[in-house]
Image (cartoon, rainbow, N blue to C red; front, side, top):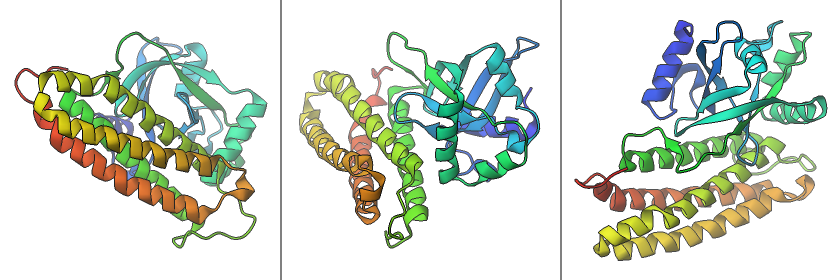
Amino acid sequence: MPNPFNQQVIEEFRANGGRVGGYFEGARLLLLTTTGARTGAPHTTPVGYYPDGGERVLVIASAGGAPQHPDWFHNLLANPRLTVEDGVFIYEADAVVLEPAERDAVFARAVEADPGWAEYQAKTDRVIPVVALHPIPKDGPPHVNAGSMAEALKVVHDAFRRELRLIRKEFTAAVGTDGTRAPGVPLGAQLRVNCLTLCQGLHNHHTGEELGIFPLLADRHPELTPALDRLRREHERIAELLEELRRAVAQDQQDTDPGRVLSQVERLTTELEAHLTYEEEQLIPLLTSPGASR
């Protein structure tokens, strides 16, 4: 049974599509359900995570700099298969502890994003492990933490909104509110990865909509054709903005213009929010009507 603090976070996380307040407000958070190394019983723990530019995500077994690894890490050493909840999707994953060279590079990236990790490492003699979580491929659509297609659409959209807010907040903290930075200071490596992961996630989401939900709705609701045509055009426009952002953050660090990238993030945020709102206005009423199914 989780301790009372963790249990409160878990319940709030599940009830609000991954959104929590208090200590974890505004953080990237996962719920990991591991198998107890000694008991074999399931244990759920909220942990912070970092995107890694692809499907895998990274978690750090800091335990706040305690002398011992956290229980969830010991569980993963004994049973690497676990369940991950990210507020939108629930999936099985395999945990892989990073080898020293990769661990050091990833940990340095995390420290650059949040110096608190270095403080935790300084408090303990153990080398704080970094763990990669690799989703297990499965047939069929992903398991979305939602009770209907309409709710699933809103949950996914809200996740993109949260991630964009986080990236804008991190970017502003890194480069200043005016978008400038001291000469020769590179844009943070983890911030680059966060941007690239967002770009890939939005691309995948829009591709899935055009292959799945759009044809379904077009077949059932011919009157929706103008709205779907508009949404497809907006997908193309957002794809252009994502490609501009991807190219900008993929440059060599010394060549990146922070002001330009921040401007692109702001423009993407504005146009994507308008797109998501319009899509919800057009599609959610139909997805919640009698006869709509998951």
